[in-house]
Amino acid sequence: MPDHNPLLRKLAALSPLSDEDRRHLAQVAAHPVAVPARTDLIREGDTPRGVFLVLEGMACRYKILPDGTRQVLAFLIPGDLCDLDVRLLNAMDHAIGTLSPCCVAHIPTRTVGDLLDGHPGIARAMRLAALVEAATARQWLVNVGRRSCERRLAHILCEMLVRLRSVGLASDVGYDLLLTQVDLADATGMTSVHVNRSLQSLRKRGLIEIRGRRVVIPDLAALEAAADFDSGYLHRATPDPRPDPGLRGTALPDAALRDAVPPEARA
Amino acid sequence: MPDHNPLLRKLAALSPLSDEDRRHLAQVAAHPVAVPARTDLIREGDTPRGVFLVLEGMACRYKILPDGTRQVLAFLIPGDLCDLDVRLLNAMDHAIGTLSPCCVAHIPTRTVGDLLDGHPGIARAMRLAALVEAATARQWLVNVGRRSCERRLAHILCEMLVRLRSVGLASDVGYDLLLTQVDLADATGMTSVHVNRSLQSLRKRGLIEIRGRRVVIPDLAALEAAADFDSGYLHRATPDPRPDPGLRGTALPDAALRDAVPPEARA
DNA sequence: CGCGGCTTTGACCATTTTCAATCGCCGTGG
DNA sequence: CCACGGCGATTGAAAATGGTCAAAGCCGCG
Image (cartoon, rainbow over all chains, first blue to last red; front, side, top):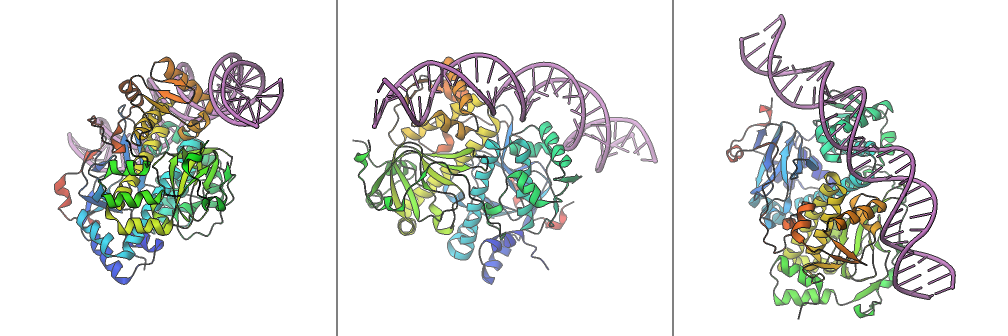
C-alpha cells in the first residue's frame, strides 16, 4: 500500500527518514484545506506567515508584469513545500496560487523552524528538496532561454512525469496534467496559441498523446531525446548516465587553488 | 575609506555583522588566486570541494546544451559566493566560469560549514544573500520568458548597477561592465547580433551610453521604467516604493486557513 | 604590422505573436 | 430535457520580432 502523504514520499526519496521523522511529517499535514482553482495562496508583497504544502492538485509560483502578462516560475505538485527560509524574509517577491482545485496544508513559521532545527533528518531532506527546486528553476531558465518551443514543452512534460511519478501520481506512461494550455504558455514563455500548435506537432511526431487532461508518453526515451531532458537534476533514483556536455572555456587546474596569488597580481 | 573586501560589504548591507564576524570573513578571503578570463572554476558533474568567492572581475554560472549553445544562469560579481549547501550535493548541475580575468578565493567545504554553524550572524547574512540570488534567478526567468529584448537588456543593466554599487564598483551613473555582447546574449536568451542592435536602440533612445566597456546611465529612472525594473528583489537599501502589480486570481481569505477541511471534501 | 577577439552592419528568413473566429464540452438555470 | 454561458482548445491569416549568415570594421596587443 503506497504512502498517502506525498510530502513523506518525496522527502523519503531524497534522504532517509526515521520513523520519528515520519510521524512528525505526518502531523504537519494534519489540517488540510480545500482551495478552489485560480486562488492565490499568497501574493507578491505579502509577508508569509508560514509555508504551504500542496497535498492534492497543482499550484504555481508566478509573477505578473505591469502589462498584465504572467510568468509561471514553478509548478507545485503534491508533496511540494515552499520557501523554507520564510523566517528570513518579510515580503514575497512572487505570488503562489492554485491552478486546479487543490488540497493544501498551512504550516506556521514556528513549526517550520521546529522541523528544521529539531529534526536533522527532516531538515536535510527539506534542504535537499530546496536544492532540487533551485536546480529545476535553472532548467527552466535554460528551457526558456535556449530551447525551441517544442523542446520546451517536451521538457516540461518529461519533468512532470518524473516528479509526479515520485509521489505516485503517474504511471510509467502517463499522468493527469491539471493545467490549461495558458498555464503551459506562461511557464514556457510562449503564447497559448503556439503551445497549442507545438503540442499538436509533438502529437504528430508520435511523441505524446493527449486525451482530455491525460498525457500519455508512448516512448519516453524518444520524448526525452526530443526534449534534451536528463532527469539527473531532479535527484530521483533514476540511473541515467549523463553524457559529457560540450564544454566552453578552459578548466582551472587543481594546483591553481594552492598557489596564493595576491589580488594586486592582476594585470 | 571604503571596505576593500566586497564580501564583507555585501553581507553587511544585508544583515548586521559583529566585529568578530568581520574578522572571520576577512580571513576567508585571505588566499586569493588570479584566474584568467574564460576559465571554468568548476564544471557540470564535478563534485564541489568548497565554494568560490569572487573578489575581482566577473564570472557566471552557466550550462552548455548538446547543440553547443550556452545559457548563462547568473552573473557573479565581487562579493558573490556560490552554493552554500555544497555539503549536501555531490555533483554540480551547472558550471561556473570566469568571464573576465578574475581574482577568486577558494573556501573549503569545512570552512563553509564552520562559518554557517558557528557564526549565526554570518550564517544569517549568507542565507539572505542566497535568497537574494534565488530572487534574482526568478527575475531572470521573467526577463527571458516575458520581456522584450530591449527590456531584458535594460533590466540586466539596471540590476548590475544596483549590485555593483553595493560593493563599491559603480558610481551613481555608471560602471565598467566586463562582459562581451555574447555574454549578454547568453544571459538573456538572445543572439549577440540582436544584443548589439538592441543596445544601439537603447542608446538611440538616450537611455544608456556605452564607451568601451563603460556603461553610463544618464537617467536611471527612465531606464528603470523602460526595463520594468524594481530593485526590491535585491534587498539593498534603496527606498523605492513598488507599484501594485495587476493581480490574477482570487485571494485566499485568511479565515480559510483556520477551517480544516478534510481532503476528501474535494469535489 | 598582423592577428584575434569583439562589435557592427546588411539582407534575408524563420519562428512566434497577434487578432479574430469557431468549435466543443460541461455545468447551470429554466 | 434543452438552451445559455463560459472557458478552453483550435484554426487561419497577417504582422512582427528576432535569428541566420556572411562580411566588414575596430582595436588592443604581441
